[in-house]
Image (cartoon, rainbow, N blue to C red; front, side, top):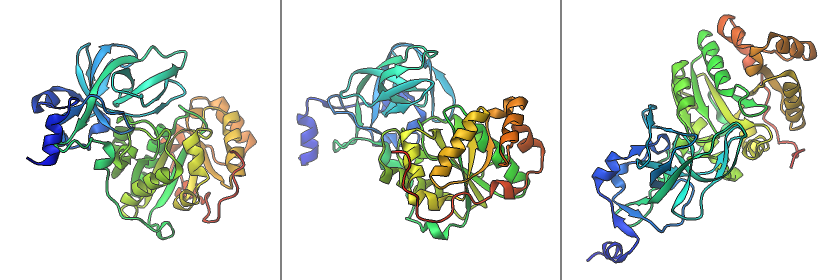
Length: 369
């Protein structure tokens, strides 16, 4: 008998799981690249790792009562339903802070896209998280775990200096500053100027909403960090963040005129800071657009980026909702303030958005630790 098959037979925790049971479970967005036909067994004692795909059961409904499926549909969940999700971390200043649990068993669903984590705290306006019980990590016949990284896109290493597409990076002064909406509005504006576009999301927590919006606004190619093998980018170190950025941008570089890249959360978030201080990332992008909800956040964000050696090409974002905020900011800066109305109705010169704000040069020493 083959040694690996014998090992499975001897294991008390690695058990065969019927294909019908897997097929019947609701499958979350973050697992969309996984070949579930590879999953033949389940390990109920494995120590969870970020990206491990697991079978779980809903035990109490809370904040997330619907699971985003691989198709984008949000399926209603009831207590007792089995779902296929992935272990991951969550960083959301307006929702949950959670990390991969230490063991299989009770934890929480901290994102509708299918993130299983131990929730530590939440925003005051957010309901208690939905409770789930992870039943075990899904495994192959040889006992190896199914992990999102096993199914990531494969792209060759690229030469950032030989880039063929202009990359516009969209940052936010904080969470919910209007980044995704800005990506879509910028994409539409570039399309109207007869410039082909791709939209990529480099960091964040796995969910399909942003991806569907990118598609709807006319981006020819759409990718996010789950395509690079991660349910979430919280907690990753710089080399892996650089690999994700290089992989996603490299996958569409040269296929379109412009790549609009969203970086999640705010400028002070750990992974965002790491990317901004990366020479590789600096050389990858051409300009920065800052989404912001108000003038003071805009000016503070500009100062933060100035100290790192960047220039903001334009402001946009939720500030569009207030004409008075827009006027205040325009009175304080010569940097273009592009409202949603501007991007939707005016023939915005591509030169505004393509203003070089991240010159190819050695990165300055980080001002912020």
